Image (cartoon, rainbow, N blue to C red):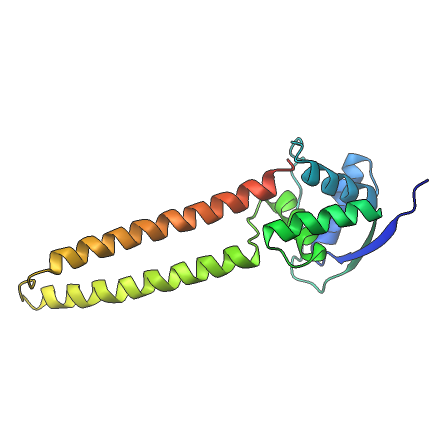
Length: 179
């Protein structure tokens, strides 16, 4: 039997739902996690799991879950998450579990930063639009070039929308890759 390395992950409120999922699949928690990781790393489609019920209390202290991966699996996982911009295997695995159980998007740090920056730009655009609206509400005519400003603002809003859509689409497709 090949030597395996130990990796420990805190699933928090996901532990109970993960245990139920694994029991339904006839696997222990480590086998289920290993299958999930291998599926994602190999980019093999998996059938969606049956409807999982959330535990009664979804807010609780994180609990520890231990899984075992061999050295190559850990090395492959580290390389894989490095390309995604995710800082730790632990964070990636928790994201995988949450995406599988609850079908919620989990953003990597670079994606989250891009979304925050993009939203900041949209707020600035909103302030500019409020100033223009206030100007028009007082019955003052638009100055020469204001239409150009509105057109530019519209282009920025469209760019922001496309940027956010691309980030979320990439994120959702990454986490659903293993389904």
